[in-house]
Length: 211
Image (cartoon, rainbow, N blue to C red; front, side, top):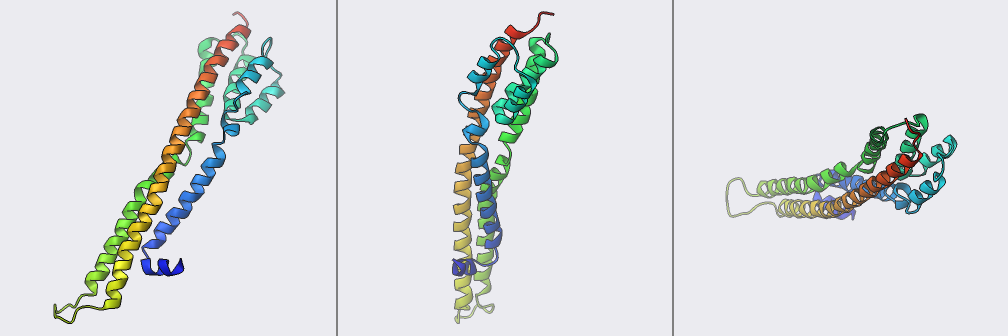
């Protein structure tokens, strides 16, 4: 592996940094976007059941908020009604949407960085290719004679050009795939949270104290 890095020359180091950063982002997103941390399947039904006749106690709402991203959104609606029992549908919806925006920001965290790596890596590989071409032309005889250039320098230039192009694509293709995967997963979670918020809003209307 080290011999390949040597053959690829110094332009490979920014690509290696990108590959390490991209791998770290992929692992972090896999851990952060687990279903149990975002939208546990039975959580909404449990919340509706626990608040079927009255609002849960403040400590129960606080525990719900720490449960998951969905729990945080649901807790915001319950807390808003608890703070103001005569809250209108619009006020409750605003509370849910405000919490939803914060959750959305966290779910989408680092996705733009992963997309940037997918876009920049091929350009970095192209830069390495250009450096390799410069090495190749530099190996040619400046007098244009028949003696040719330096074979070692010519081989080194070709190695730089080919290895950097390959490394750029090897980094960019998985980064793009994972970015699309995480983007689709986040969109699915956001739809689930939106539907859960709507169901909770309808449920809270039955618990609201008439103004």
